[in-house]
Length: 260
Image (cartoon, rainbow, N blue to C red):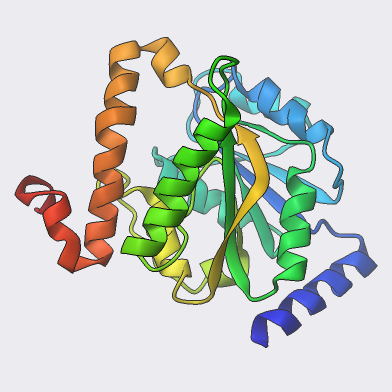
């Protein structure tokens, strides 16, 4: 009942005083090539009552200038890394509902509306995640939906007991985030999965299949070998290592080398 009263009070209060109802947080480091497409998607949102926060993680290009040209609030985080940048954005957020995506991701036009409606209909939820759309015409969207569902929903429920979170397409309650202490080493953990383990102790994490974004394959395009290593090696290992940290009985999944 706590979250029900909390969300109802928050919505009524902010509707009366005209404040935004959702804070969008986008960490960014040297994203001048991709940020315009990402931010353009927020000009097309069916839900208009939101604030846009771009966390400039010490960029050396025009990331901050571009963000401001789209009306975003730009805050700077000097400590490099996705976790410090993400945390800075969450602290700066005015709203109880925080939507999170990446600077190279394009959200659907009803993205914010879907997030708002889901939290309104399910006030006990502390976080939610959606699915990915394929950036390639030759690869059907259902392939990426299947991968997302298996890795973050089905497998998450089996090994973790709850849905996991996916950074480019997720949202959470600021009041819940303020009560937890996630890990801060992004070389050690998959930051969003780690966040999910902590948030799940406070409430439900919901999978919303019609909450969609188109993700960027730019890591493979810009450096094929490095990108392939990240997607096929580094990311899966951090995924498993994060689960092992929270579920010690599963440490054998990552081997002795990665348990140190």
